[in-house]
Length: 395
Image 1 (cartoon, rainbow, N blue to C red):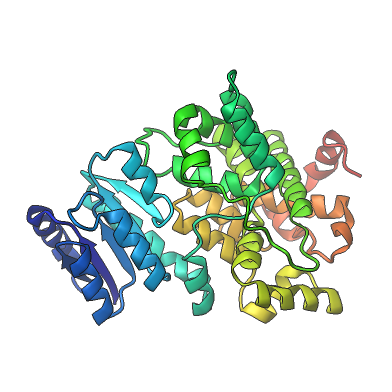
Image 2 (cartoon, rainbow, N blue to C red):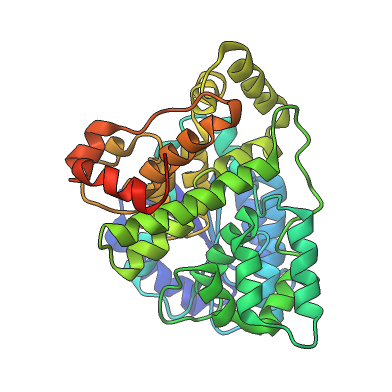
């Protein structure tokens, strides 16, 4: 049974949560704390899977509490459930918080958010990796792109279109801004599909705060592992995103599929960034095994870590609250049949785009898994591939 800790200084809110949770007896084991100090005392007594905290509380506010939870118990899922808060308070939550829910929050939304976060753990059977990845608040990006973004934000003729284009060229910044814009942090009423749309929705002042004040985009913590080329990873990811977007259009997909295909393509290898940054010594063994045995990296990852970057990336993006279509495409970009359905979606476009991009570059010297031709046939694309290759000018 999963243990959920709810923290709020308002007794009426805690009473309301108690009443709401009576319907879920036998599924969850809830506990309640009237503030940060009481919450930390309960956490010290027994393990919890999720902490759901209010933001504005006397003494220790929600951001401070979740900072401490991150430090002491990094594997716990951390959620803010709060009423209207000033923007500074909201921005302070970004680092230690996986997801943000706004009050009033209905029972269905609260339950769905918590259950979804807990269900993600089935993709990672390795407790150590769960523990490490749950502690990831940002990913390493390219310093040159960060510098370009800062210069644009400080320019007197700053352009949101140019900001979105810069962010869309960086895997790490794309992942973070899609986390933020699709949460309840900023109260957007509809889902935002691309980094360009995200930049336009947030506006320059919020973006300046994210980049210059709280440094939500990491650019200093670089990965230095022999055989790990972050620039090549970014080039491949952007190429897969562009190809997946083109395939979605060629297949007659709706705008949502086109946008999902691009973003999922850009993010499909985000698990490699997370692993290389968070578990450098173990990931160095992965790279050595792949190089020495001539294995695709996802195969070497499974042998050394018990899971691949696909599952790790999906787990992280799921914790961050990204949409299911993106998570599914990232999780199954090597094995689309594991998705359990054969409908055409971002999982299909990203799988084909990833395979074709590896073929086009011959894996940049690394072994890779080929396109699953049986799956391609099952979604009805087999007879279209020749024409699509011609349109995309692929050999």
